[in-house]
Length: 434
Ligand code: DSN
Image 1 (tube, rainbow, N blue to C red):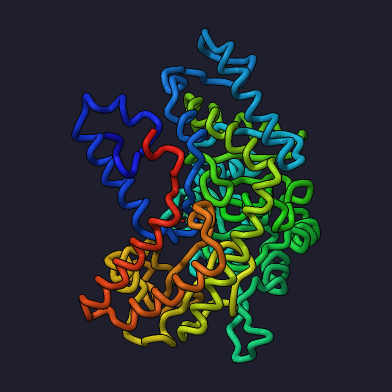
Image 2: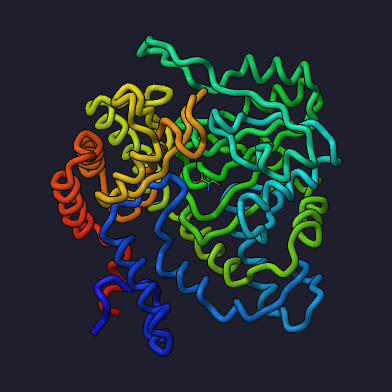
């Protein structure tokens, strides 16, 4: 009998390893019966799963199409060319590199292509929404390059101008003072549209290059819901597995002028053999993202995040920046309950079947391990077909869970409701019973 929640199109091939098969089954169960609200996650298509589980994992292909260091790459070259062509067409870019194993690697490669060690980089503060690779003291980036930062404006009590949006006066001031070689836009925890144009102007005003890290909004950009940084930034990096809904990995877009430097920075600069099974899965995802249905998906992701934000505000949560314009909602828990930390909220919600991650809020007095906030995202559950009505219901469930967090009966009743809600929106209906 087929399992209720298959983990891949190839479950049947794993019967010889019942231990791994059982673990995959447990994870499939978890992904199918709990709500996936981590803003950086999504459900790939079965076609992406199939390509990333393919025989291409067997092949070594150091180098690039037509310039490999190993034999037998005639077919792999066609696959990587297909992925690059689909990606440049999707975003209207001059050059694409589809080999980065992750977004972090893509960023490191971009820095390596654009900078010398010790050069100054202006990027978003980690505690205001920036990424580890934007110069966190814990990241190698801060040891190789000198990072200076900008942040968001202060929060206000004015509902029409809530603040906590990128402070372009500050970006310009720091740029003037520090004369960076590179300006970086992009974040991991920021619920607003990031307009690339003011960053370009500021970068130009100090003779800096401009990198747009589109890890989070890549799918929204591909789907036309957000402005594109391609043609504005010198280099655009992103992950392929967040809103873009592809396999786990990274990619880089750049101008033709920078193509050689970017390619050399990825290989041999940072990586050895590319993961060609993932490159094939990226090609599949890029074709999917070019379809009209994907534009509808991107618009729905934004509408769903807004519905979730509205429902959370109704439950009494303060939203950082007052709301959302993308797939994320950043919740400041302190006004809801001064004693409730992000860590505790994340753990309690997990018990109720609501999966999300704790996050710092701007100027958070608590440590990044504890935090005062939660980050929620709409991309994954939108893929399953959930709409605004379900998001409104989820906002209510989050409020109920956190208000009743010390009552096991409340958690059990939310868990049951989540299970029932998820049953109507299976992430892989076409695999079930396959
Ligand atoms: N994966 C990123 C995110 O969750 O936003 C962090 O690296």
